[in-house]
Length: 88
Image 1: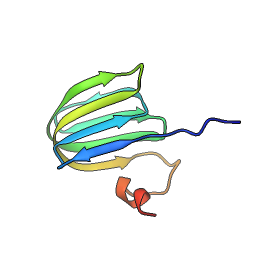
Image 2 (image 1 turned 90 degrees about the horizontal axis):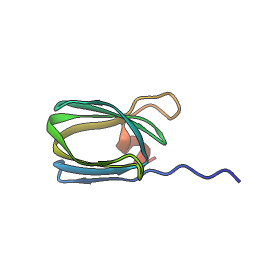
Image 3 (image 1 turned 180 degrees about the vertical axis):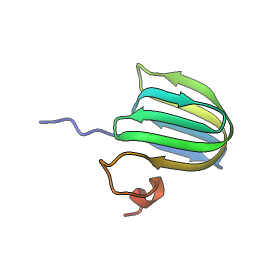
Image 4 (image 1 turned 90 degrees about the vertical axis):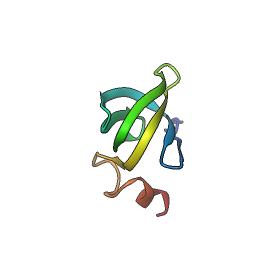
């Protein structure tokens, strides 16, 4: 039986985010972060973002800053942002 891929995203007050299921960090700048995750490429945009914790062995990242958008960027899922898939 194939193991189902999972990912958890916890956002607090648009200022702190914890994400698991991380495979790789493709880009990390103060205004844009691109993460390769188990569920696809995740793009995070905002201001003043900085990494609090990164553990690729556990697949976890924590980021602090001001977040404007969180969206998957691949064709493997329906178009739309994170919240459009959360409430489908």
